[in-house]
Image (cartoon, rainbow, N blue to C red):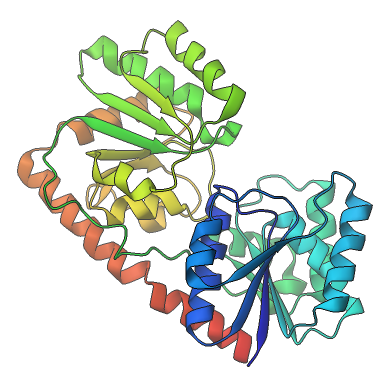
Length: 354
């Protein structure tokens, strides 16, 4: 039985963590000896691992990167394994630094975002990818970037897009159409919160009745964003909430979904909303056009253009009942075709065993 360690920063509420937790559980079901390694203690998704019988351990929980690296080195020294699968930039960089010291059969690094501008950390990471056996972007946009910018790595690149648990993320049987629009995104600047608020203000001027909810803002930032919404005069249109563990219930109680990001990898939340049968509007960037076909299962807009964003939201809010049901059915069917858990884990098994 191959021993696999899935490595990321924490079990926080991000999309990358959600995908890694899902992968660990699926590999466990396939008969592998799987554990999850972390260096920050954030147990948001820990209950899912516990339920699946996947152990997790936090090593190097310190702000000092040298102490963290030494702690992780000692862990791998005591816990030999066959395969390491790292998610996110810093864990992948760390895994590449450690690879020459251990006899791992395979190191698989996963790219979870699209590189917009090469920083020195990015350059270092791609340099160290010479130690990786396989590079797995979750988006075709990032694969194209790597292939064109670092052609020496192209033979290692293998795209595996995100999965969706379509048994969990499904349409509510008793849902009645209303006017609730949901956004699920963090407080990162690229999530485009301010332009989204400006689009709501424009819709209010037009007299469109819509109730929006934004999930994913936390801590001190919550009150800051609430104050910003109030100053823009749309406090009656937008409510803000922290991340939710049972996010599928949020989708099932909504009528539409919006993702206004300036850039994305392969967005979990967009795929999950579609799987729940929600018509969607999203920015026309990165892999979004691969997921959303204009007027077939949603609408696309320029995320820098507030008027376009408002037009798309207005368009989807004014769909006829027949149009709404058609798009809803299209999204459910498309989710089953391209976000399959089975296809996702089979692709990883192929890499592990090849």
